[in-house]
Image (tube, rainbow, N blue to C red):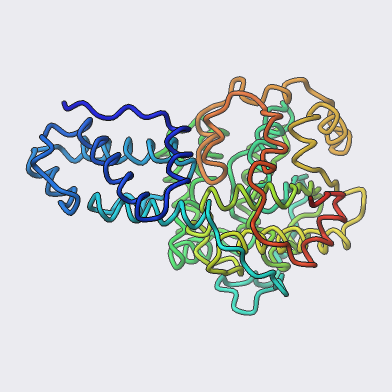
Amino acid sequence: MQSHIEINPDNYRHSLLSLPLHEKIISLSVYIKSKLLSLLPTTIDDFDNHHPFQELVDENNISKEDSENITHELFFDFKKMLDLQFYSDEHKIDTIDKLANFLASELECIWHPKTPKQIEKIETEPKNWPWDLPKSPPEQKVKRPIIFLLSSPRSGSTISRLILGAHPQLFSPPELHLLPFSSMGERESQINKHDFQYMRAGPIEALIELHGWDWCQANDFYTQQVKNDLPVSEFYQYLIESCGDRILVDKTPTYAYHPKWLTRAEDVFENAKYIFLTRHPYGMINSFVKLRMKYAARGLFGQTDDNPWRLAEKWWYAGNKNITDFFENIPESKRRFIRYEDVVSNTESIFSEICHFLNIDFSSNILNPYDNLSQGMLNGAGDPNIGLRNKIDASLHDAWKKTPPPQQLSEETQALAEAFQYSLP
């Protein structure tokens, strides 16, 4: 193994940000080659910045497993160093030159954005909605209670899910992505159509946790329900009955992006309760951009924009506005509103009130949601960084102050934020 440059991630990121684009590319090229040399049994003269990675693998007789581990470690290093999220398709970038250009461009776009124009209008019921909308409601509503945790993404819904799931009377699995669909067969068809395979993970992890099954057993059961085209309402009923005395919590932020997806809850359930979680728009926007959600969402939930900061604002407004409008037709006895900042800084008080709302006793377990937490409850869709912590982090409530968005928020966004009692410095 060759030696490589030892770099402090924080110092290197800050020095990179001060460089013009072409110097970022040069610096990153040197860093990437150094990192590869720490992982590959080769010499620096054996390849240049245009040498495809796969050829390096073949020339050095590296196994497929080792090659995948090298790629994983390389991108994990980038994530830690650049404080950005990367996606599996990006692991296919095949030369140092291409990878350095890609990383430098992403840094430039996110950390040195040109001030975008103020958004004039944000659609909350998109005209070109790519998903099939729910068909007629089921003949019979599900009678047993269920809790929906509604929010936009990057609003603290995953830590809130874990807090609720730590309560012995609640079961709060990863995102279920069930509500918008009429049947499991239709759901599978839509998942395949849009290549959103991750949507399968939540129900499978829930089955594993509820029954003590292994992944193959849970996947076989899930696949059988797809083949049977089981109504989604009956799959919900099965999960709820499997919970025993616990109440099922469904935390799936994408429900907020079409009004008819939200109203579907009242069509399917007789005794649903709703918790509306929001976050300061600056905090959500900052987190959305750093996680590079533009690439994860792929324009499939109604909001599009070439600028990641504007796109994040559209997601904040559309999700929060749709839930706000939905709540206007829900009795007060069935709904509660909470803010992420209060969740992490005043957890006991907020969730004491939530327990009262849900008619369950307060449990101190919710103050330590990572205790006795299985890996399955960290899998599936949600915050990819949630497993890097081991406690509720109150310092995150105002982390956005370090990087406010570059644009002036739209008048619609400002008005909604003020309605949630957020100040916009």
